Length: 209
Image 1 (cartoon, rainbow, N blue to C red):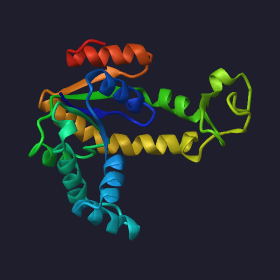
Image 2: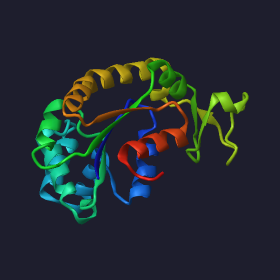
Image 3: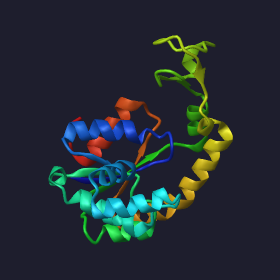
């Protein structure tokens, strides 16, 4: 089963994708992982990507698309995969359709204010990386696991979260229309708890949770 995951920052894509991958025994594929892997292995496309990154430039669409094509051709993708973070634009989706048959596009839908509250309330341990939320910390400012300080990451402040959401909506709204027209898009409420969200996605996919 070939699946695309869409969803704004903080919607829980990573958590749900990992659970679905474990349940269906398919790989989760993200552009970041693909870039690191291709550069480490020294593939032709990986070396191309590295040249842009080393020059401080964005990796162009055509290189990312080639990376995705290479990755989907590998043996572990024969029974399906979840694409997380790709495609980001309609041109990328159109390019993907030339070499991949997508079965379902899952959109994790969460209202912006819920995401702002969720992300701006997140606190991270400076030492071990454990994450907490102010709603459950009861005023504590140190990590329960190692006793080190908890901080708010720069990209988790409310203003930055709103900016990230605006970018996401601008990029992804056309994708939602694109996949809706193809009859592939399924919206799932991402604020109904991890287990309920997972069960809803598995139901859409016709798989047992």
